Image 1 (cartoon, rainbow, N blue to C red):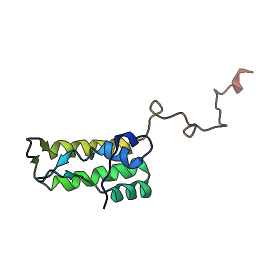
Image 2 (cartoon, rainbow, N blue to C red):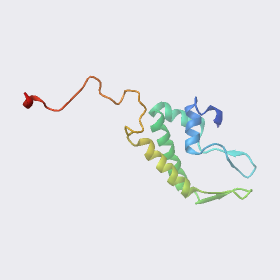
Image 3 (spheres, rainbow, N blue to C red):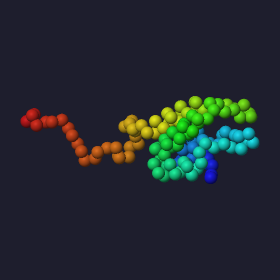
Image 4 (spheres, helix red, strand yellow):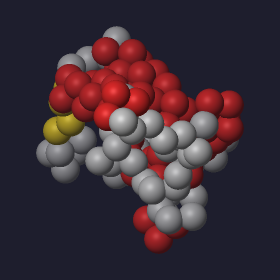
Length: 129
């Protein structure tokens, strides 16, 4: 079981981008001061490999929301940092919905994949002869 995150690798690593979006960057600490991770590298990588990036991260967000909905509402570490899981659950659910939403033309990247090439349909001009 591995837990890794490197913010300098966001551009090239789907795993690090997924951790960034999920907020699972090893910032939480347990009683001994060790980092607490929400998901294993293998879990996130498997979901991304199985379902593609957007759906894989959406499934991870759903899983985290379900898991932490069953936990106590609040977590407080020894330094006084408090995490309200209810806030995170709402954020994970919103992230999952956003990742599953159809991409609009305004936010789509211009790769040409969203356009039907070779199809042009103008107004019916047959009656104007």
